[in-house]
Image 1 (cartoon, rainbow, N blue to C red):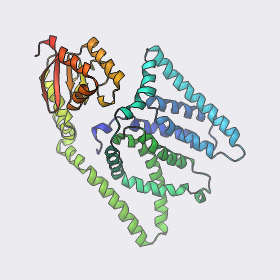
Image 2: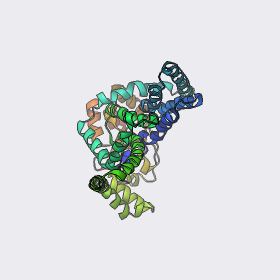
Image 3: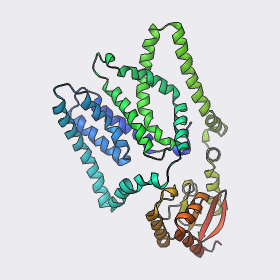
Image 4: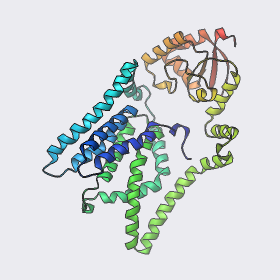
Length: 381
């Protein structure tokens, strides 16, 4: 309920259970079987296919399995663990690579993964204010869980290992540690922090047991203080989510189509702009390129007019701007929607593309910062 539109269906949220599966396969037993190691490596491969930055997190379980192996067997176990897990990983990655090669998309995928994506942070450096806002928002929303996770982390102390090292909890802690560099090498969007939800939740579940055990022996004053602190964290999280709850209730949970649209427009003004474009072009078929918020595609039901995605055009380098120009000239989508920031980028980084748009498309309207263009041969303007 507290999620922003940008948070939904992101790889970090969808990949969390996959990462946990890989970690669990590697740490659920003292000495994982060959099948478990193969499966763990395969799941790491699946995580890499979903998003490359998930793979190191998924490998955390294998790292813990190596570090907690019995003394005297670590060398042998290292060879066994690495060998079988790498075999599983290679099998999945090879299958994905073969599919991409068969469909002619392997070169494009490799370019996106290893050339284009790493350069986007230098092409469009993220502002520090975004990192601060994202971290504060996540901290506020998950403050109660984080407090319990801190309690659960006390089981990581060696003197608490009477029954053996808590491999799963150690892997969760390593997962959290690796989350920091994973976020920092990207664009600091709030959804990136979602990858920390699963390890926080597992540690918090352990923290619930620790807290219950502690409460049985603590003084009444300490129990009251701890309860008050947790209550304050819960209240802060609820207050932060209250505006979204209020909007959801106001629009009757979006069950009816009209209420759902009103809820969308309340949460994200891009929906109102998209609805205006859809109404202005009703009954006129044709593909669409959006340089800006792609919600216009969803609301208008129009297909992407060119292969290049116009979302976050500030991340496009010179080669991709040139490619976009070629695609526009070849595919000639019927309609273009260009927001204000994208118009500035066109003038600054791709004047040739801006000139092409002015020559072959005409402006026929707009709303907010968006301008709408139609191919001149459509006779719209």
